[in-house]
Each structure stands twice: as C-alpha cells, then as structure tokens.
Length: 103
Image (tube, rainbow, N blue to C red; front, side, top):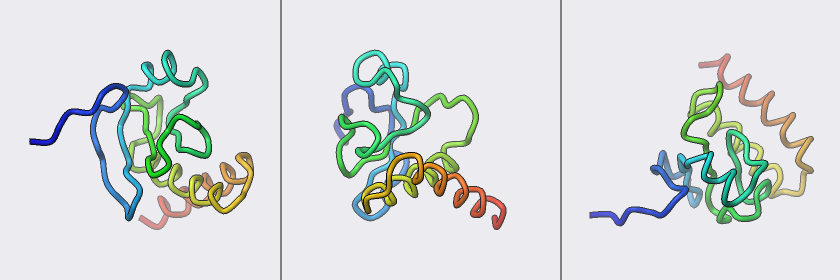
C-alpha cells in the first residue's frame, strides 16, 4: 500500500516522464509555504516545490485540472530553458488555448 504523503499533497494526477503532477491543498501552501501561490506552481515559480513536480491547487477558482496542468507544464519547460516568468506565462496561456481549441 502506498504511503500517504504529508501536506500539502492531496493526490498524484499523472506522471509525464520524470515530472509528477500533484493536486495540493492550496490554502495550506499559501499559509505555510508561499503566500503568493496561485492555481499552480513549479520549481521555477515557487522555490519550495521539488524540481520534478508541478503542483495544482485542488480547489482552483476557474480552470479544470487538465487545462491547468498543460499550462503549468509548458510554463515550467520554458522557464527551465531560461525564459523569464512573464514571457513563459504568456506563451503557456496561448499554447494551452491552441491545444484546447484543437480538442
């Protein structure tokens, strides 16, 4: 039986290569780890997130987890290659919209 992970982890959504996408308790993250945590985060936006993880707030305000995961993974990949946050965010939003329109 898998061992339960400590807060803020809620459950693993998927593994994409070496990256794990987790639902987390966003209010716990905001009160104990990073007050500015939004709907999602990764190592390049929140230093406390492990390098190979993406965290999604388990209770997002708007977007579905799949949509947020796509956007977070694109943003993470771009920032890992050296793109700054604002540029990566803009590109990730545009790419995620394109993917959603094709679906």
